[in-house]
Image 1 (cartoon, rainbow, N blue to C red):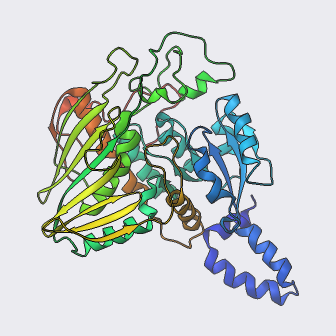
Image 2 (image 1 turned 90 degrees about the vertical axis):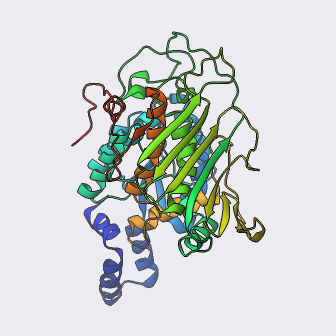
Image 3 (image 1 turned 60 degrees about the vertical axis):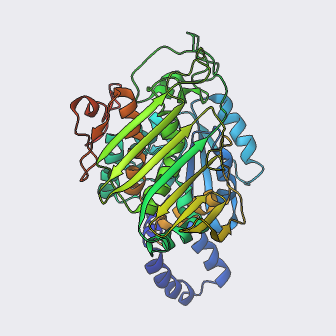
Length: 447
């Protein structure tokens, strides 16, 4: 991409005024001018990671008014690249380049922004490499694999001035924005407690056994920043979520991120002061699932505010009437909110207002996608152009993701602990050892 277009994307409003006068005054036709303006505002993107989340991008990327060109599809698995380009052929007219290595994509100055839909251990490293390379980043949740990485991303945003947006798409849901604003304005009095929940019926997973990497998989690059280990059967395709802590962040990072983000947003809290967790693996005891599959976590915040997380990965009982959502309790009423909208209750428990979304967003289905993802992605594009306020700055995403990490650390250490409410750091020496991780040599983080 040339320097003038880069400058234009940074200074859209000012550039529009100047070029309008200069362009038309020099005899350029309105039609020709419109083409140039369209090219100047076009954002060239790359998608890194072509698995289950890929379908969520079809709509926001291909719609004409997004003015985006998909120039790269990148994945460490050859079959994913080949399948991805065929899928995109139904939605766009150009043919993206196929690439194995994210670093080569970042090195291409034509690319303005990347979508980071890689496994969890790649989320923060892929993002900081891209930002250091001059790219804006839309990174799927969780934005980090450990708490320190969230701090690094916030530092990167400040240092490099790029837009980094986490895929906590409910921040862009019309109904969620509406009811959260009402909560902040006192519709249920003082909001003091939120219960965030998730219930799914995930089945047994294979026991990982030593095996050769599947044909077409770059196992070395899949591991990337993680310490090296031999390949085990079925690790690369989604089940890395449940095979320990090398690549995944368990169900807390995988799904609690969304509901805990809504809870924290509603209660207007930042860092907890105390965390306690009860969690264990309770279903299919002989399978390869190596982390908890049920968790009950409590986060106590200043001002006597509480967030609870009730996560059930393999028990689909709808304790709260739905498979996922958030209940916010106040001194004068209660709100139930999920991806389908919200219901407002008075203090007596009577429903007094119901607002349902007109679109759809997947709940517990793998991959997800829907109208609120589209709005969140479009907000990312418009934030890059300077035309919209970012729906979820990365420091907000990192604070919500931190709750997931604190819950995981409490589980891994079998400890409850106090937390510094100024920065989220754990006031326990053993637990604080898990604030960061060991990195493969050559992949160490910045700062």
